Amino acid sequence: MSNDYREKLKNAKRIVIKVGSSTLTHDNGRLYLPRIDRLSMTISELINNDLEVILVSSGAISAGMGKLNLKERPRIMGIKQALAAIGQCELMNLYSKMFSTYNQIVAQVLLTKNDVDDPVKLKNIENTFENLLNQRVLPIVNENDTVSTYEISSMEQFGDNDTLSAVVAQLVNADLLIILSDIDGFYNGNPKECSDYVLINTVTEITDKERDFAGGQGTAMGTGGMVTKLNAADMVTKSGIHMVLANGVDPLIILDILEGKNIGTLFVGKEKISRNTDK
Ligand code: ADP
Image 1 (spheres, rainbow, N blue to C red):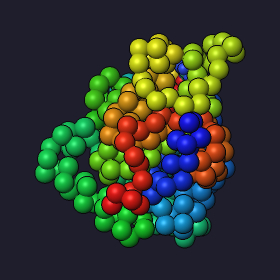
Image 2 (image 1 turned 180 degrees about the vertical axis):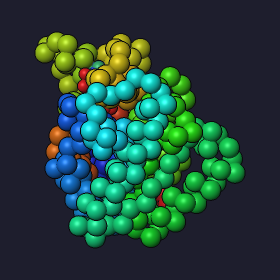
Image 3 (image 1 turned 90 degrees about the horizontal axis):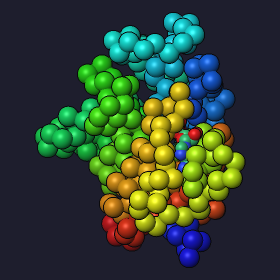
Image 4 (image 1 turned 180 degrees about the horizontal axis):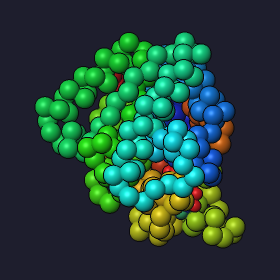
């Protein structure tokens, strides 16, 4: 049965890919350039194959830290916001350069929770995404940290890019959300705390049991941990969107996921995902 679900991923046409800070950065907070390059190559290849892709990318604060040569992530919100503003520019500059190597145009989309709650703004956002995708441009999305402290304080609303990626996946009616993290998938407990925990291949229902598995917060670089990834899975699967959580150590893994290979954890969407048949 699990393989039947995986087979469906081959039909995914519109895909949202989220990469976490732990994938994009070194432990010292600096950007991990070869990985960003592999990600750019992989996504460009998907778009060459007529898939529609949206990238939700963290890493702005890390990029800002690198630019200012800071060794430690600051704690004061205003400084984090300033770093995010510096780093977002730096990050997009880097993406723009790397993607242009593969002949791929990118666009920056910065969102806040208020934007998607307002019907007029929501329509504008939807239109922007549709037009960018029609032009085969890759939208690169992040929370607008200048006007919103949610992503960097992780207190409420979007709270983190896991939730943002789920909101975007729903908004564009994606077929699949792929979350790349520093872990092979969803385990029955935090594998960094105990090596006995095992990887779960397929989740068809998110219950209290899965919530227990997710436990608390993630790494120092990440903001979400497994709780927000599970919430993202809950949100999208209810909208009929599949979600795969996998290790972003080599972003080429995305190609294997789309070939239906048994990689990471698949959270099965409630309805059929194929846009080829229902659109
Ligand atoms: P990212 O920066 O990619 O968003 P996070 O650090 O926020 O990553 O979240 C991933 C981390 O969540 C893992 O490295 C792991 O330590 C932790 N985690 C907690 N519970 C689980 C679980 N049940 N399965 C896998 N990872 C878990």
